[in-house]
Image 1 (cartoon, rainbow, N blue to C red):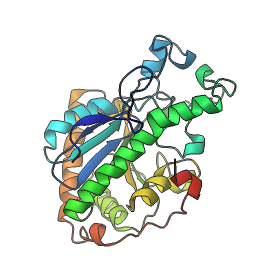
Image 2 (image 1 turned 180 degrees about the vertical axis):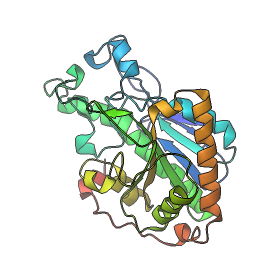
Image 3 (image 1 turned 45 degrees about the vertical axis):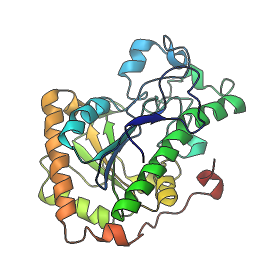
Image 4 (image 1 turned 90 degrees about the vertical axis):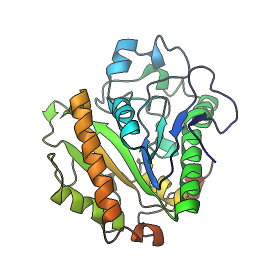
Length: 290
């Protein structure tokens, strides 16, 4: 049985830094995941990937800002839920992208900002393999193991992937505070979640914002997660300045507590355990295997 631990599928720690993932394993079918919580790097932490340390620790490109703090607030508030998160920066290897897109040579926010440590001449095939085996695949292997354990015990899982987004995009303000990520708006978990946002949500929400996931199918790892684990992918986006304070994080703890209660009490909740309704195009077979 999995317990609170860190994991590396290769059986050895990365060259330097922490283990790739952390799991807090509890006794319920509810799993919260945070693929972009971490900011660790494999080498040269004083100048991560050739960028300044101060920039790296404050940049949305490096991690989902304030999401790890939200997890730390949520863990004691959800004594039965399990939590899994990545400890490494998405710039090392983005576990929420398909394997071919996991290492980005430029900023996700500004197309003219290059990441020196991710330049094509720097990320050799050997370096890419090192990052994927040290950071990327351990995350997905651990997620698959955790989902399998919960499915065996409870018959299914309620998997909720959490992200934060910036208040501005290309200098334009975003007029939403929370967003929903789903590949198929008609699968049971998506309809339950949309109903919750319409009826119980205290935050500003607009359909398809800040991201419309079906438009990102070639990049996002959501299809990979679905196909590897036979689950319907669903995530929430939280505006990062909304969880910068303890008060804000407590508000979102209340939000997710109400969401879990709403979902698990919903008349269609049992459909999550009896159907495999995902319809997104499956990734290529080579993307499903290491």
